[in-house]
Length: 413
Image (spheres, rainbow, N blue to C red):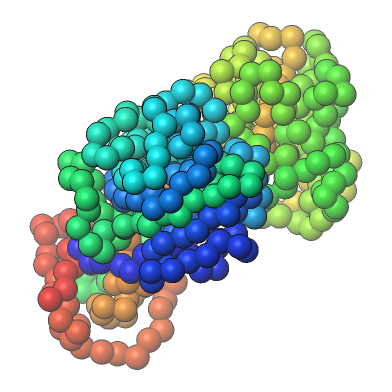
């Protein structure tokens, strides 16, 4: 287990956020400014504390954000990319529903982020307030963050990611946010790391033809409130009644919805999001993913039958990468509702790579080691050879231990 220097990020922050105290103290002027940490996480159970040095009325938001959040926009308007609690009333966001009592200047807010079990919880002065969110993985990689809840007032806070002793006891099973444990694999005297690339093409459409060159089209719409582009507006967590979705006309099967990119896009995976808490009979049952280079001639890429929905969203992974200008869902049926309703479609690709590491060294451990091996069930079709100057495997105080066919354990003096 190693310690990584983590602070508030001098680059990824609102333009008027002021940092001091080795970038651990942040002055937030208002809720249109946010600062995030220098390092994000995708797995593990992590804890950190935020001390409220100064807090005006409506002045504090503590939680996490992803890389898509606009750090110079109203924090309450970037709902799809944040998970916060609010000092004025203790409500949680983006839901804006009751969670805890308010907090004030002088309080210490502990944050317990469990990416293995998809939960986020908070402590106030050492007292657990309960689980606030159970939908963290939708965000992808997440970062500790603070902002303000007021349009014209702010706050000053100091974060402790673990460089010094926490004020309160760290929850059992959690690690300080600045800790890092990594793994390399070893087989037949060779060292490897596994790399997974997950790319989603951002669309964030605001009309059927904006932003250019994107074009969204559907076979029909239920009304002008539910146009095709709303399935490509970037909003994945849509609640019932929010009207941020595409809906087809009643009793129009088959139906379809498509997007045209400005250039060919490589795709071997896509997400479909339905309405969170919406009518489950409106979800897709039988459909085909199609591709085209001219919008007229369509090739069937893969057909999905009797799709089972364990949640309101699902990843569809094809394996083989295809390359088209247009992508379309050709929908044959849903689960009985008169029309289809889709909140978001996100196309992209997932690639699994084996890195062949020439030597075991501290730098390679840091650069290529993994926090956790989670993709051993996947097929790795690509191999990279890392070219470096040779060095002693026992240099730099590095020790290796073979753990009976398990991944190589690595530690430092």
